[in-house]
Image (cartoon, rainbow, N blue to C red):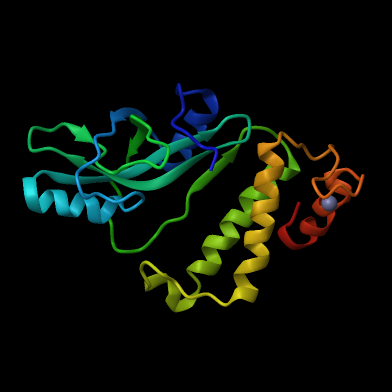
Length: 206
Ligand SMILES: [Zn+2]
């Protein structure tokens, strides 16, 4: 992915924070990966830390930014030490040294995933389609009894592959700076919104 910890709490990030935790605040926390902790597995990581060293689990949202594309909030847990310090003990794929975190006192971890909350950074159909298809992938992964499965989730290829292909296409489009009025990535010569964008609009909405 192209997302990273935001350099500052910009206006769109304030909007995102207000959306996930009305009246909430973003705070920068250090990342101090715990030995044996696993990337993306914050809940088991913090649980194991509590059993070893005490303290508490604090749930909330980690804020990510894809510059010029979107900001998103991811359901996340950090460790509160017995002395009260907040630390993210989960290692990061891009080796970020700090995170932007929004504590959410209403949340605790119940074994169920929550989708990210995403806000586009400009009005563009390619970004809207990327966000929508990302939401649909999570919905498919969590459909019916799949919601209570952890780790490997078995999903029929016909349900998930077209969405993953669309997300890949849109992700590459955005990474190369393509906007809805630019030539489509497929090299048809037509603008995105008159080419792949038109097809996906009928499936994903505008
Ligand atoms: Zn196309």
